[in-house]
Image 1 (cartoon, rainbow, N blue to C red):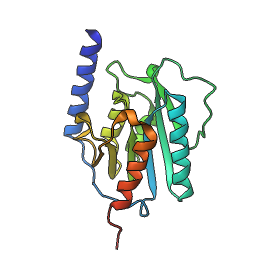
Image 2 (cartoon, one colour):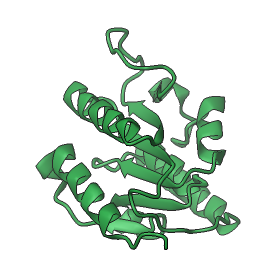
Image 3 (cartoon, rainbow, N blue to C red):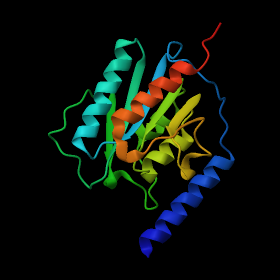
Image 4 (cartoon, rainbow, N blue to C red):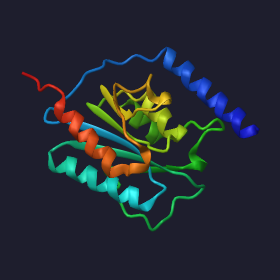
Amino acid sequence: MIKKIKKSIGERRLQNALKTYVRKKEFFNIEDINSVGIVFDATNAEDFEKVKNYANQLKQMRKRVRCIGFYNARVTPRNIHYSKSDFDLFNVKELHLFGEPNNPYIQTFISEIRDVLIDVNLSNKFPLRYITALSHAKCKVGVNITENRNIHDVLISVNPTEGIDNYLKQVDFYLQMINKKQ
């Protein structure tokens, strides 16, 4: 009961924040992208590795990549290896009472203007949706679910059970389809 009330209040606070939120939307072909942000659920080690590999692919294409992952536990394990210059992780202890991320580096991630934000939040975790919703990215890409329809510019219809690999392939496919700048 209390969890539902907290979730409801968190959702209401997010919707209120979005009422005054303004950003310039722009669409990019994958070749024209300079900077990419990725938000993802870091709880599953295999999924974390897949996101790291995808971020490395983007970096090989000469994209600036910054990732932020949510570890859904009170403590982030110390045996996770990642580049601190490309990734930030946060956990349940870094959430406000109503589920909003409460950390300066998250606020920095939200306020940075980047070309594209890729939301790899297949499990629809509120803290990640909060970051995505308030991000100043010019183009936001995410999974086509009801909660994402008012915060993303490009919605990808995939079955979350098909996994991150399939989703990221679809993201690449649709970013390649967007018309190139002339």
